[in-house]
Image 1 (spheres, rainbow, N blue to C red):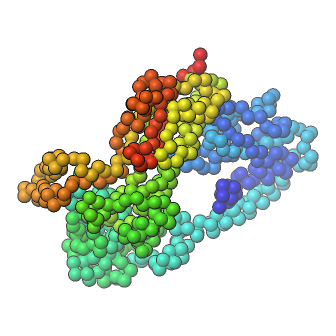
Image 2 (image 1 turned 90 degrees about the vertical axis):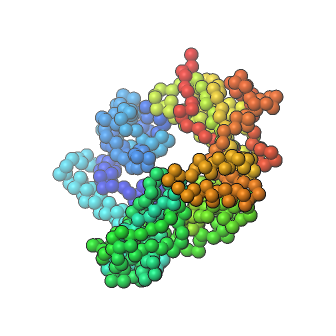
Length: 537
């Protein structure tokens, strides 16, 4: 389904009727006009006497949706100049197409029909036809939605998940809550996904978590809703309080679980949202979770796995239990999709961290502008500058440096009709944290172990374990964290030393894309607030 098809099957009844009525009296239907935030006035392609309606797309809550604009509020029509004039209340999405229905001047239409007022024969017929067309559109839309897990409902959803061998849990399946307790040695947030398999102490019954929960930093416990597994319907799923104590697969950061209250038969059938979550959990669990599976997922994504840290690796490449770190080689624009593949492939309860050799740079600019009519046009200019720099950065390969001269040229070419002068106020760079084996001394590691130990650990078990590990390993290893480390030495001037403020301002600098012999990718980290606009004198 492409954008045109999506618009077709989502057309509402009133839009269809308006198009029919305007066409019946010889008007112009759905004339497309491209919207530009820098402009307010948009001439029609033919002479018009009145605007019947304008439809298009607007951004609401981060999503682009269809919208019908209101005459005299969102726009007005100027008879003298034959233009649509936007009023700035609600505007179409920038660079989207809005559609105009309008009537031709009297005497220029070839249609014999003129009366489309309420109650007229023409309007009654148009509304009747429009209703039938709108009904067909909605039926097509419903049939389309019924084929996907995220949009199917009721019986349609039952048929979609049947391919996974899943059936909707009915009232005959017991429900309850299980409390997950944090391991004191593990800080930060801990995600407890839906579909985690739990069991009683002796394995008499199995249960699954039904909703995602997050154990926040500082929380010691959290309650998670559960439901009896497929083969434990009816009385088989009713267990006493304290009976559920086992996890089929250990969850990183969780020390123990229990149900304080007994399970009971559900008051209602499994909801659509719960069934969707269970189906997605089943998909994630099919043949996944091993190191080989992660390696194969990266390979199938046509990327390269350079190094891996896991609990069974050699001392210098060993991670904590329940954690795995993957160093990959991939272009920045593909990193998010690759990380998503890894997160979908990893086993439930395993923390997978994906890192790559990236150098992030943030230019801060002072731009003198010209020929901009509106305030929103200024914001669009900022977005055009960022988009141009992003396109330039994406064109660079691993190890390709960026020069100030090339950046300035890219910015000016982005909107040369609107830019008078550009100057760098600052340029900040970071590099990905890839771990630094052996860079911290044994004394530093001991101090870290003491600092991280909880104050309520009377036996100092955590400190003892950490010291034992430090003594056992020949070289303490700091694993890649996925975070960034500031490094301004990556921006050099003509002499090869760190660039001075004068060299930054004049653009006579280079952003290095190599650290040692390894090629790194440059990544733009920029937002509109990094650009200061000044009107050209």
